[in-house]
Length: 308
Image 1 (spheres, helix red, strand yellow):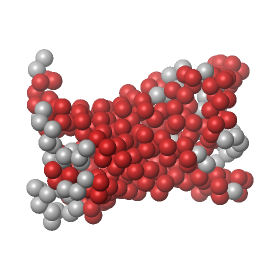
Image 2: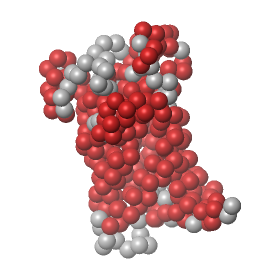
Image 3: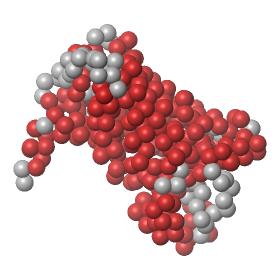
Image 4: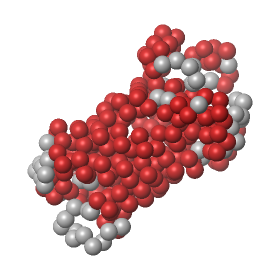
């Protein structure tokens, strides 16, 4: 009965809730572009606009939000834990910095790498379910109605039944290889850009909404550009299932076959969509997170060590 008042009375509880708001804002604002990115990566023909038109014409606008339940259901805990883990690791990797000062850029980068590696354990199954749903078309559903997944829970149960727990973690290695460096770039870029746009804000926590949006957006763009080829490989591996033809037998095989059959350009297919989505989503994530913290703390002056 008294759980929520006590939970929100703690700094950790407020940050957890703020992280949840940030994650939800990011998912809702960028999910249609994420669906478009996944379809571009798994397809070998058509521009982003033609794929978008085809999906809406054949399956309706709701197709762009198919599979959103999986990341939305887990995003509160996931996003909150990412910020909490980063807060701990960014200082652990550079203990020479005083606790009254913001983490050094070295600590920020290394803390981000560690955070990305750890969060992959939770993110990999969620992304697997999301990708399976995003690539499921109405035309396929009509002809293969028996195997159609109607939601994330159905997909997860189906994977566990046919592939076991190991199947639920298909693509885990490539997810970790993608997320570790990506998060290092992600947090370093955000911290660096917010300081450049609003000098002194890393310590005062007084940056404007404009600074949050731009720094967060650029952080998202940097994290995607640095790891995008790995994301293409991850999508193709996780799109496979025992009921579909097995095109690839691992990361190296997928990379080799994709480049051989479609050229090096395949490794950057959908990058424009991903970058556009990244700017919108991560600007929303950091803005929602910072604003929620200020509302929860009721003073508008959140110190950097509490609002990474």
